[in-house]
Length: 561
Image (tube, rainbow, N blue to C red; front, side, top):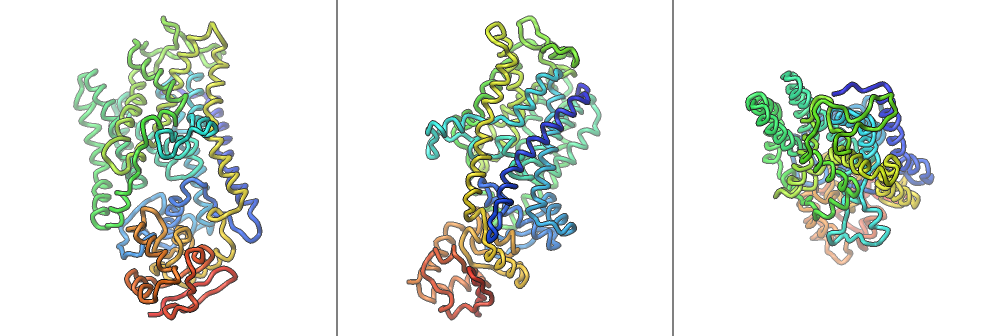
């Protein structure tokens, strides 16, 4: 890695802090604008159902548990699930007395900064010139695809191929990653750290870097097991390339991969054991998270994809000049050094080979997202970063080719500005929705009080029957299990949704309700506005229920056995 100057560090810190501050604006608005009778849940419109599950895991840690179980289904389970991120969230919440959602956002900001900082270190290992580094970093910070343009033109088709991923797949875009969740940020940062350490190993030959990478790989597998699929293919292709080039198959391929495999083996075996022990985890894993059409990915990356394609082709087919800088000396004020064909020299400052790793990452991801796996779409995580590195290479080369027609530096700025609009649309959407102060992004104080009653007066093993949306909140707020609360963490969620609607239908007899309450071991009924909307059922007239709590909006009923 070429030395990073103090000015570069200041640049990275300044822009990282600014972007992270922007990501806080919708959440601060949602909290500060809440009417006196409502509470803001603190989560984005996108994927709030999933983020409540993260808080539910963390709540178990806050209550003193080391191993977790799924609270979004009524079936009995063993506590076997371990996740150090959710454990840390819960423990810190307990020690500091901060609310879980507050700790969630503190972690989101810290992990977001870590991701952006490690991204610049990764860029610096690939690119020597500070001008190209900064363009790559800006693209990582703000770029998205054509989704917003297509939406304005009314060309987005949710049922067809025109559904750009920058509108709905948060793992695919770095800005979304740092805006939504610490899980995405920390896992992406760990992936980059592993790649950085392996680059150090291939450069210096010191086995300690492989050992460090193995430890981080173990942590990554504990936090986000999907990402093990992301790490191995790029490293395999890169190792094969170096092995053939240097004719060193043991040191270049067998040694690092055997070491990484041994480090990751315990967490792979543990996750496999969890799947065998818990059918809920099997159902969860099998839930389809399939990739959309290739066109959705291409449109979702937009200009980044176009210029990354140009940069990738340049890396592959042009003769690169080793051990040369892209640009002039940092203080010279000149642009990148040009090679014989008029483009900037591509070099990592440690040799040309490092440029192949982002290329292999992108190519392997293009294959991974269409493997016959239920979680295809998850494997796009982090690929925005190598795409931006390649795009910066392609953008500078292409802009330089047009230097006689226009100011290439101005063209680069214009291209970067044109990439930001889908990210702005994400922020604008949340602000628009939060302005309405509507459910499920706001809960009434009465709903919160009823959940707190359950937290203080019932066991976390008690199963609560309620509407789907309230069921998504209860495990995170009260810690109870629920009959129905998540589209894939609730076992047989579609069937349970049908049962729930039938339960609240006033035409249904008591025998059916008694069977449901007994079969699913339900201990309490939560009955508020959402439950009333499901049908004409009146719990006060049901002999199976006894009211134990009531406020203006919500009644809590205990099941009479």
